Length: 131
Image 1 (tube, rainbow, N blue to C red):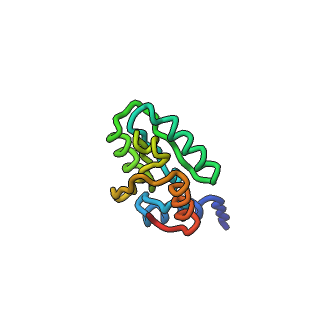
Image 2 (cartoon, rainbow, N blue to C red; image 1 turned 180 degrees about the vertical axis):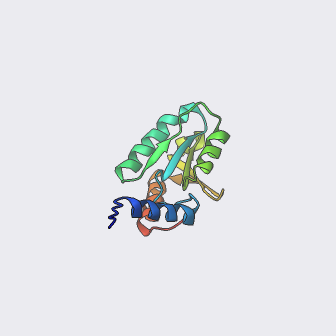
Image 3 (cartoon, rainbow, N blue to C red; image 1 turned 120 degrees about the horizontal axis):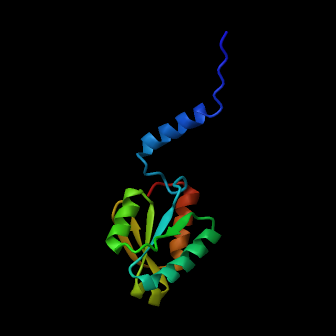
């Protein structure tokens, strides 16, 4: 008689199936990082940190890329990581109290007020949709 007990085996298999099914591009509600803030310049980092704090208060998982890389490399890194939302902020966005969205598929929406931007991400999480 042989007894076998795999406490985590089924969880690991389930996660493997999810990973294969989505090819790493998880829906917003399941993604480890739901949005990444990408500043155009170093002066925009504090603005995106404030935005990230507001988003975290609503229960979102968001990071701000404050590295010394160029903006194009930050976008490429976020695309490779398959982050659903990239939040970009520049001078016009800071002046207008807005942000720009860049989606995983490369499409972009500019000049979205901060409250609307957070509401769009929260809505995608609550409705469990793929963006």
